[in-house]
Image (cartoon, rainbow, N blue to C red; front, side, top):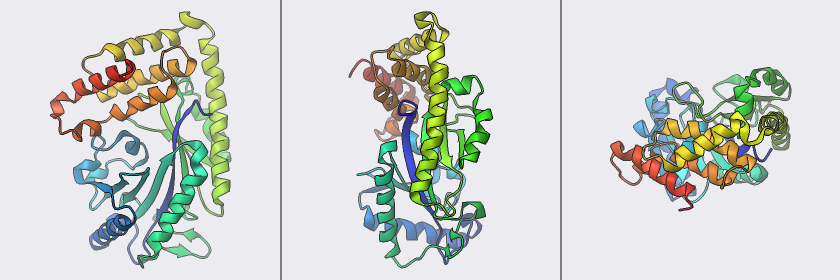
Length: 325
């Protein structure tokens, strides 16, 4: 499973008891939720950054956040992403629920990540704005099906062979029976060039944190085993295989490109990671995954660069990484 999973995210979905769900339905409540959440979170995480307005667009966020956040956040009123500069904590504000507390990490860190979110939730409770809760249904959501503990565990998985052979749809029902769902991640223009997918639990109702984690990890093992079986068969032909040819083409292009769009990076990254996983290239999976930080414009915006130069800066950064720089 480890070779197929890039990283994981845990989240707690919460809504304020005294404000309207869905938050986009009431302008005054929307504003209260926005200011209340940022003020409370800033006391807990004083070294922070807020993305709102146009900064919530797909190209304005760090790549990892675009995978988990609802699309078109830049078109919503009083929506924001709060990020802690010293940890992997973040919070989505008014993007669907009033507040979604989030933390990212590795799959073997899930228990610690959940504990950290619970601590943040407890600290927020001291602000005096209780979250909507029902004795029977648990924490309430603008979507009744999401009521429960509010905990969701998501794994970002690279599944190029299952994608290529269109094997994911037949697996969907098996995952659903285990309480999980899978969906494309990091779509660009309706496509999924990186062949990334997000696996998550469907519900948190009447489930403990441990049960949710177990559900998701079990489904991840199922997917990873099927992906590995297909990939190993494809690589059995060695350097003569089509997969090997695509791997080396991608490696050569990324190592020597002078101009590189975000979409082009994701397309070739897909093959590059296959090669890293198979031990065909002089880099490991961790090095391949680190290139995704350049898949959006955020890294270059932080430097104050001219947007016209992003394609050149991206190519420079990728070339440097692949050359060991």
